[in-house]
Length: 131
Image (cartoon, rainbow, N blue to C red; front, side, top):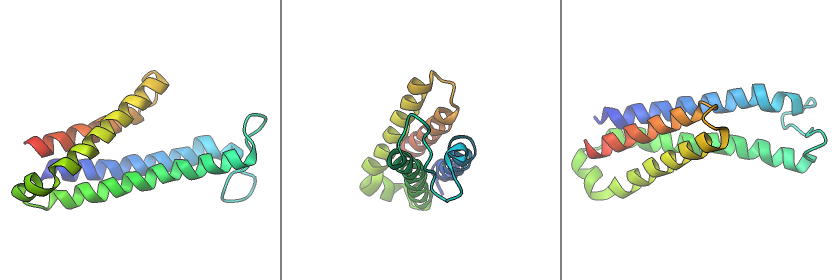
C-alpha cells in the first residue's frame, strides 16, 4: 500500500468538499434567489454568467474527486505496476496539482488557503511516485 497516494487522495476529497461547501456558503449564497442554481450577479454579472460560474465551480470539485479516486486506486497497486504503466499519469496529476496551487497562490497573493491543500496533494503524489 502506498500511503502517500492514499493520503493525497483523501486530502483531494477533503479539498473538494471544503471548496464546494464554502463556495456555496460564502460566494453563491448571496447570488441565490430561491433556486438551486444562483442567478443574481448584481450589476457585474448577467444570469448566464452566474450560472456557468456556479457550474464551473462545482465541476472543479468533481474533477478533483476523480483525481482523488485515481490516487486512492493507485495506492493499492504494486510499485512495479505503477512504475511500468502509470508513472507518467501520476506525474501529470502531481504537475496539475502543483500548477493549480501556483495559480491560486498567485491570483490571491497567498491569502486563499486552497493553494496549501493543492500543494500538499502534489507533494504527497510526487513523494509516492519517487519513494
